[in-house]
Length: 418
Image 1: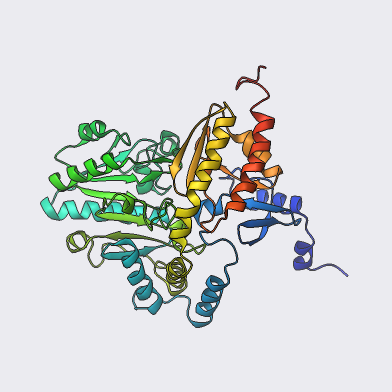
Image 2: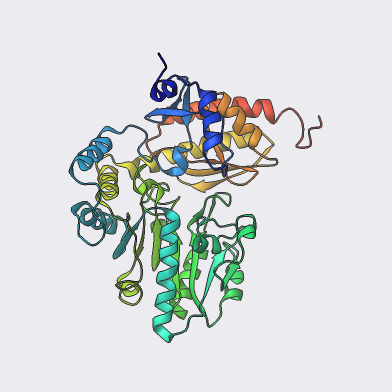
């Protein structure tokens, strides 16, 4: 008898799956050559049963690790009850999630989206509408930061300060100026009478794991207050507890006018949000100005509600504050041991090691040794473990990375000469 298509798929090996993917999926990612099948805690397993210690967590998404039973049960319950209705109607998970998110963030109004990029789009629209209602003009400008990353949709891409992402898709939305993070003079030089907003990541992720300095944030905030410019903080990657605070700006007490959040917000379910103060809400987006079919649906918001609840009941922020210094210590020890590491930087469980060479070979060797890492630019390894990571997990990571560095960084200089 001929095998059914389901039986054929079930019997495919990992390489056959990869070949199928290359025939079916648009090639916009250079994927690592493994097919991940399941996760448990801070570990992932591929189709062949090989175990990987995960220091990527879905690019900062799986804050509570894989297969958290309370989280999974909450989603199963909601699936059996109601998945989607549209925003023509209220739904209880969205109301509860918004209330909890307001409490965690200290912001006043919430708009749920499907992704971080969509959250940035909404934030840009809100800022421009705020300025439009002040003077009726449509030529307002936004200041963004060089080396930033805000997403790949046109609005988000327009404020992304990395040319390689924007170049092939020009022209962008226009009226965007770029300054340098932690350089207040560069910001002042870009301010004009048309400036309506300044947008930045509180910790740059893709740009190299670079935190905004407290003094810089406070000076930007003061400038915004003086000129009635809106401060937009992108907390998509650095938010939701990653720095030991629900949102990284809370460490410094520099409250934004608009904030974006996503990634760990839904714990794996695609969901984001942009939030704003009451002042901005009253003077920006109104009925008909913005919308989304799926945003704020009951399933996504049940995930948000449960994530925020578990952060409290499992003392996640306290755990991050306890564990992050140990991660920093272990990374510093590696830096001291190897001349090829120039610097460690970051906040909380969002850390980066800066190398004197491209890090691709190190990441590849780590994968072979059962450790998942990602880069942030060519010469930075980024560490984004689940927030429930243990000191023993950090020791395991450091041992594997040490072995990889011993192989790569002691072979010769970056040009390959002994």
